[in-house]
Image 1 (spheres, rainbow, N blue to C red):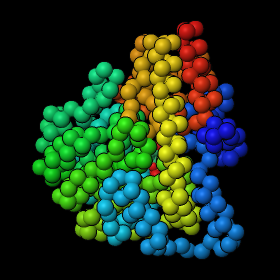
Image 2: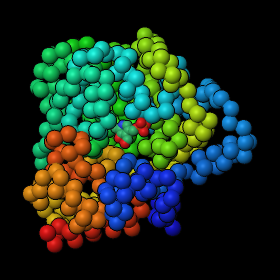
Image 3: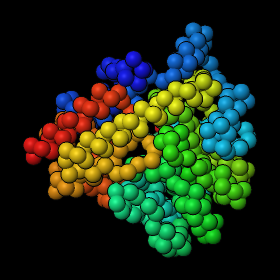
Image 4: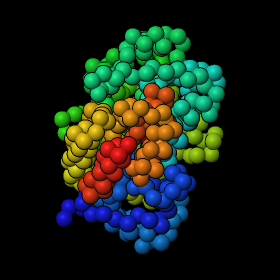
Length: 389
Ligand SMILES: Cc1ncc(COP(=O)(O)O)c(C=O)c1O
């Protein structure tokens, strides 16, 4: 049996996805397919490295040394064709933390910050928490697929936007931005001197027909305008270990960012276990990841085919991530009723689309990073509830 078919009991492991159901959905009687972690074990080499490190038994202050940094440099080259230098790296416990720091380092209160909606909800919080002004460039949905409204994008940048938080690949709509799209976004950001904060946490999770292109890899000018946030956490299911890093070739920007980290007492490093997990994942995890991607694509195709042939719901055509964005508008329910319907009738715990912006009001987001048996159960629950509505 493939390791991706094994069903693991995650109850009572302090899992947000499984053990917080009562808090989030007011009932434990839902199959949790929400928050973005996977029901799969991390690569065995990562587990072995962590156990070996734990056996040493001393957990003193830990440095991110060149050996660890080189695993990132090599990963960027081998997976993304991006040649970076060790000294472009800084470290943080999470991408969301880095975005909070970056917004404070590179913009001022009341500055305009642009995002492409519907989008990962903490982007809104990053803007709101520091009293920046939210500017939306809503994505265009056509034929079950999302694209960028470039006319609106330029109009908004021109209005004095200071920073653009790019989600690449995009959560929740599953787009893996093409070369032309990235080039055009970058060209306009250079034209209007807008800093690009590129959240590329889903970079490694793209289907085989697609290729993730780090926006900063397009040219030196674009790299100088960009701060890229990445992590092995989505890729290898390590979110609880809190390892992430920021890449920028721009020395001045890096200095400002690290100053912000220090000012807020976050430092610029990784904890002992994060260090070990990141290094071993990037050194040994590639075969595991290739296998995972095939499983995710199969799950996505299954969900799409099943849901669309048995209901009028539409599954948005995606190119990456393990998050599936489902258009539930045919049910004719408002955001609150839709949420209630999924919990009470379908008994499934999904993320409500409204949390990604008003454009998501009639959508739900489903996490398909779980064994096929779980995906089948989730899909059957939805179909059954929709048929009985
Ligand atoms: C686009 C995006 N950015 C960031 C994160 C979370 O990153 P972290 O846990 O490193 O803060 C997620 C998690 O789902 C995400 O989808």
